[in-house]
Length: 180
Image (cartoon, rainbow, N blue to C red; front, side):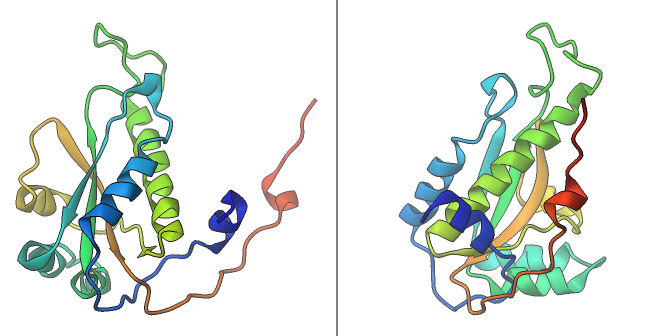
């Protein structure tokens, strides 16, 4: 699959087949995602592949604000918890911030890695949906995350049972400004 075809073809998938994902497939997707750029090559993004009872407990216990997302988690064969090692992106070796953006680079790096993961998953025939509305504190406890790790998003993943249509997109003219 060509890069542009992958970018244009990837959709947020919310319905999955009842088919397990082989660990080697997820490992290959993570290996591809590891090529995402990061602040001074800090490579802060980590992935936790969650299945079975823990996945269902997260789906049922961490989505009171938006229950439909929890239903999607429970229906997927796997949940990817995207995490970031804190205190690395945007910092110098002495711990000071490099720019006025402070530690916000962490979100940027994790976002790039998450999109790269989603595109690699799409190329592997998998569907994903990136979720941000969940109880981060409760999910972090359930995942037993160490203090230096922040849960960035949750991503149900599986073989798609649907082919969502592409939503309307803004034109390049609406998105782009040229300046001299």
